[in-house]
Image (cartoon, rainbow, N blue to C red; front, side, top):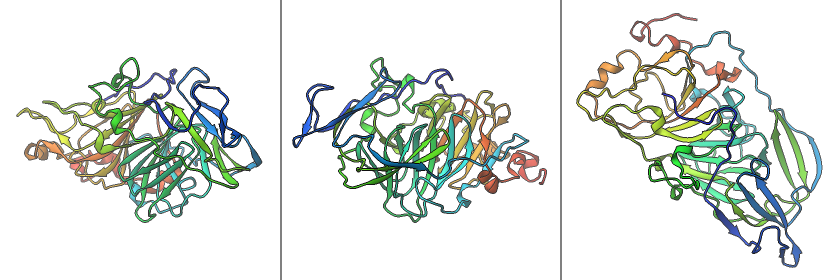
Length: 405
């Protein structure tokens, strides 16, 4: 199963519905004052001056800083695996750690994406801006508010948060207990798939969700005083001391801003026989696709096989993050697990699953997020701590035997 994605050489920028919030001048690049003081216009754009953009109007110059120092490291300790094999990562075993910035425990990475889990131990204090990636947070459990210069955005469990690079943000969780977030830092611009959009960028009638399902910031925030901002860029963290609060925007408009999308608003597709993962694609980026597996009907033909077929996904590594429900084709997974199936090798239902599926209802309650990458993923040393070493042999000998390490 190979969902469509952008070619490696293409970094098409995200297209969201046009939105405006707050006070704006009548024309772009026009003199604009707030309470007698000039407002400072900022172009927030992709692909230089030729891509999608937003215009923000600040009370203070956004560049004004008092000091810049080296911040905490952003390096990842790699496992440097010598054997490439299918893997089950028991993410539920990871302990709580750090905050929404420092607590990201990376498991699988390549030059296009970092995939990890966030189980926060404390609330985020400093503001974060990612200068190298769009951040996608899938809130497995928990709720809270995403605070940004574009305004505040409430989120709940099973929400995707898609945060464009350059967004200044702080994640505030309502409660830290039991909060768990799947985190993806994506080098390309994260967007809805091309085939879901009309020539003007609007989502078509054939798309599995519409603009009504995308939630944008609802109200601008105003802050006062100095602030600390951490910039992530090119594998390093820099700590900026701002002489103003970054939330000083009085108005903005455009098509680049953070959004929330709940996985249950994805309308699943069903067929008389099994549909490939492309039917579940939710987002795209360069060399990356993100899919949502939600409760749905399965094949209704009397002879339909109700499980995925064995397949060699020759161009993609596949990662499945298990959220809720019963995964009929996979044994031994729990909520918070991740499976990583490497390209070049077949994978599919485990022994006994096909036979057991003959008497099951023609529907599934599974809830999962899938990431497919068009370049190989590599495990980190954190992943090594939670890997199930028996998983590569779970198709052998009825799943009861296999090599031990």
